[in-house]
Image (tube, rainbow, N blue to C red; front, side, top):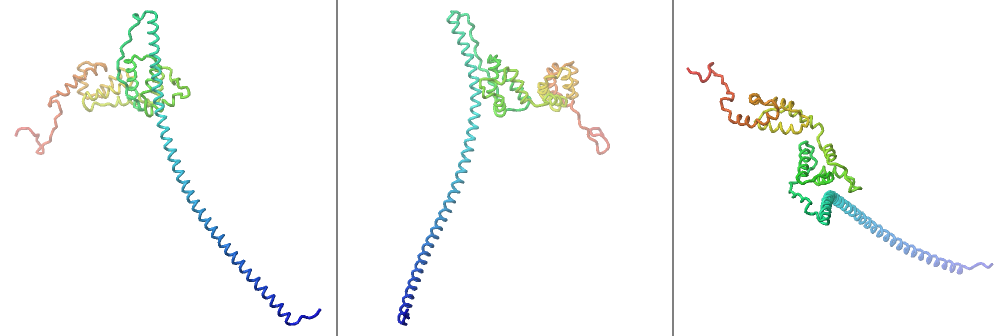
Length: 321
């Protein structure tokens, strides 16, 4: 192989240098282009992250608002349901009473229709005129013995004047006058699944259960103790009024026991007056209190104890020198 001359060698080296420079230039361009693309990608990633952060913040705010709105709606619905339940229970009790009254009216109507068909209408007794009896006060659940007894007594008077004898009607009418705690107890005792079925069969059953729920425990013992400790501190009429109120709460108080307790609490002068009038039982002693009260009001000043003063000089005041 023939050796190359120096010119050929220089030409070859010059060509290789130019090719290397071209390669280095193209690599720089590629790196620069790649850097630009990387920069664009990084910018895009930052924008995506910022957008995502804003979306997460908005999403959290929306979830918080949704939670508050949901809670308020649930509270509002709960209050509305409670009010509707109370109104529904009250209306149900009234509906039951109206059904009973309609049943009575239908029964009377059938009697008159039968009498008209048989031509015996003249022999049918005329209906009694209805008296507009005062309605009893509503019972809210008081546990005072006097309030419980007064409510039962008021209902019985209302039934008597209104001519209501049927036990079912009595129980239905009584339930209308229950409110607050008393109405809540009635709702619990009432079988809602069998709406036409009453929890009590008779009026006595209702009274028994009613007193069992609301009558104070040991009421008789407490009233008995109050009677024994009652004293005639004010006027005789005040003493008689307090004694009578307590006596009405004691169904087992005998005449002898009542007379002993009544006399024991009186002031001495009142005892002497009753004994002078020979009142030896409780009924007669209570009936003569008006005369004693008049005597108490007319007592002269001389009958009252006088205050005694001690003289500083050793002698009594009011004596002559």
